[in-house]
Image (cartoon, rainbow, N blue to C red):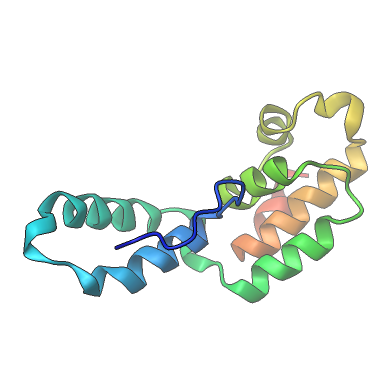
Length: 127
């Protein structure tokens, strides 16, 4: 695999990394055994994370729903990748969350993340 045009300022979600690796694993060559192993292990790991159930449409919906909430791109990406289920997890991911987010915004974030994760009942049981 050759990087034609590198853009080091771009952030990729776990879903995007999984998609890229799954689409490029067919290009394995015997002389790249270590790359094939790393690719396989990364795919295997990512398939056990919430990104397995994500798709481009869900990611667009997530980003659109998160627009009114004042978070950085990196914080939104972390929420998308890790899919927190409790306010404590959000507090650990968002810097100074107690000052920046109200309780209502935290609950909204949990609902949005649950939609991306595909299990709205988890949030309802915890609140």
